[in-house]
Structure formats: C-alpha cells, structure tokens
Length: 266
Image (cartoon, rainbow, N blue to C red; front, top):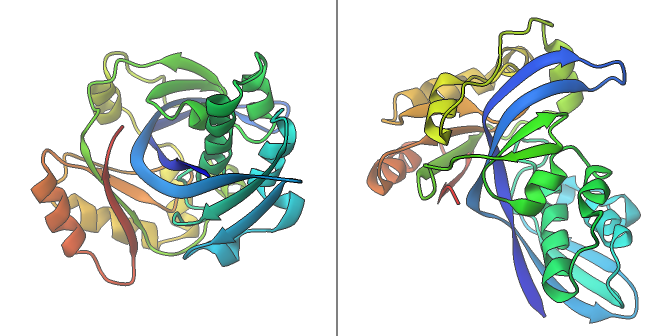
C-alpha cells in the first residue's frame, strides 16, 4: 500500500480576461499549493475501486462519477487499484479538491509506472485545474488554466491559513456573476509581487452569492496577515503570514463554526 497527499490548491491571483465562444473564460492565474490536503492510499486489486471516508465524504458522488475513478480509467496501470480517499477538504470550495485528488492519482501512477507523454491532455479532460494539481507546485495558468508556465517562487514555506464558512459554492454560478470587464493582466515578477499586486476578479460575484465570504475576509484582514484573498471561485479564503506564531494565533481566534486548515506553501 502506498500513500499520496492531494495538496490543497489556492489562487494567489485570478484575473478574468474575457469570455470565450465555448462558454469558458480566458484566465491569468497564479497557482500555489499548501502542504496538506486530502489523503489517498492505493493497494493492488483485481479491479479499480474507490472508497471514501472523512469529514466531507458524504458530499461526494460515488462510483464512476467520482473524479478519482475517472482518473484511474484514464491511465495505464497494469492492474486494478483499490483507492481509499480520506476527504479532508471541503467540496465546491475553491481549493481544487477534486482536481487535487485526481492530481494525486496521476502522481501515484507516475511513481509506480510513469505517465504517458500525453498526460497533460488527459488531465485537462478531468478539469481545468487538474494539470496544475498534478504538478502541485507554484505555476502561472493561462487560457482556461490548463496552459502552465513556471513561476519565480519566493513564497515556498510561507505560513498560510485557509478558512471556509462551510457554505458550498459551485464554480459555474460564480463565473456567471462576472461583469465582463477586463481589468488587466497579471503583473510580472516573483510570486510575492504577483500576489500582492494581483486580484481575484471572481470575489465580488462570489460574495453576492455567499455573503459570509465577506465576513471571512474581514476577519482575516484583522489577523496580522500580509495578504488576504478568496481562492478560486470560493468560498474558501486564505491568509499569508510572516511567521508560524501569527498564523497559529489567527487560527485560534477563528469562529468555531468555520472550517480551517493551517499549513505552509509548498
């Protein structure tokens, strides 16, 4: 049996540049990953299977509808795999939870068998965030997010706090709230510059749908963080700190009803 972590994804910045004819949006985003997330274990079996436990297990679809099962079906493994998923990240939360789970499957296959040369295309069939989640390291995402470029990472090891008001927020309705205004490109430079000078264009629309996001952001802005922002399409928000003590003090001060995860950027 071998294990892998499905690292939580955050968007340090997310600029929406335009709507596409295919219904998607052209994006410029900065992906970063936290050193914690869901847990997967794999054992050989006669046929592929997926079992799920954990705090958020009840929110997932089962069978072949589960993204882990779909990832297994896309990759050559030589034998069946029995996968157990410990679902620790909230679903529909802007953390790429399902994409992270699929990314972990790709890394497990890579470790045991190697990945086929066309793995990025296979990953993109599962979702726009999946190629980035396979790599699970800081990157710039272009197009729908599947076109990846390396980023000058000066934030590895930065203490981070993720907070979710425990309200699921599907991606589609948030993008539908976008006002269609192109507010400009990502700034250049290293990750910290792109993060501090960037923005999340989906934040206003997400707050209109889930007003509790504004409460989370306001709380975190008074917690000593040097950057506070919503991740992806929400409803999870993140805060970055200069030291572990500040992060841990902020986590202790959170309302008990909110979900949170304290970690560091990979």
